Image (cartoon, rainbow, N blue to C red; front, top):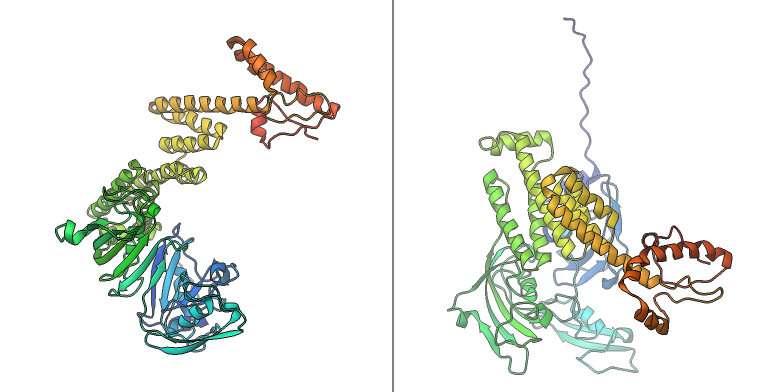
Length: 575
């Protein structure tokens, strides 16, 4: 066998880019991330991608340094950067590529990760600070705006004189309106600092920290669904502040244990506990709609009551990380969460149920490799003994994922988000167009939207691909027929008499001569009502053809071509 010699030129090692050199300066612990709201999909941006994002920069004391959001003084326009090319803070250069679309995260940065970096390519705002948060926030205004801005720059036990011009002397409970002065001087000593957080942004649900907890905020908070242990005392927010429950008294001194994300405590209670550190004590003031008006109300709590809780977070257990679990372990964890989601769905807590199903889908994306080579290594290392066939492994995962997508679709349908429900069904039907349950659920969403042709196609396809689904499909088609008839009947009544007026007269849609209606009601019988469909359709056809010739003007409610089709009209000319 002849072999030809070839010149082999060793590839030159690519020189590191400026961003690579900056990344080499990163030390452990200088950048911390907490996911506030998970994103969607499974792809993250990389060098060369253009990213658009909103950003709010705050000091550790909570003072907003700068923001793109209008509610924090920005222009409301997101930042657009090309990763690897645009000038960007080192912390964001490292952090943004870890985010999914729609995700909201908080990054806590040491000075060398933001404006304190040597030769930082981004100009620093005119403010001194060490560590910062990149996060959104809200400050409840109890003092004039200018005084609040000045106090926000102070540290505990600091004394300062704050000069506030008239334009920043906004009305407040602290002092009366000052008129006729260009500037007011305030001598301030910051004796004590209590974190106050407006949870809803409207002043109704307020969390006040009474005792600091242990750890870093918010990285060490139970942001994700966890098993929590708390002591709490519940009080009615009235003059007496009557205590209606105290775990130390009414629960034999035992703390309350509950799993977050399952609707086991009032919504306002859980929202605040998720932002507490272990050992922290907080005082929460809660409105009725986030307390017991939408939750099982204790007997000694009246309807519409405002509540105050004193809560101590003793500790929490984070959910299991699926990485490294066996196949059986993964499926057991998935089944537990799915069963919880089903329970929440039956209880009518559709938003919480949807969150459970979506959590399993996200975790599946982390443990189910999409690349063939990765999959082989993954299987050989973790599941070779239990499931040596990679195709079988993926098939099982896909089956469970399909059911979860359809459960999400059912929740969205209950929440009235029909378009999103259809999108969830399409994730299943795009891969398997003959999936019976997917066809049924999508058909129901189309029917809810009034898109009857699309719904009918899905129900008929069900019977075509699976004869055993014929009873369900037949029942759905019967419901579809009834709903379509109701829509068409309503349309006929609305447009009745529209084309009966003489030239030059205006007919109000849906408004008929009451005297004529009463006379007609006395003389009409069931037979004439049954024959009205064909007669009215013929009249509409004739009127539509004659309308341009007569030059009549018609005024009626906006409608669509589908409605005219239901009325038996090919078109309607409006002058």
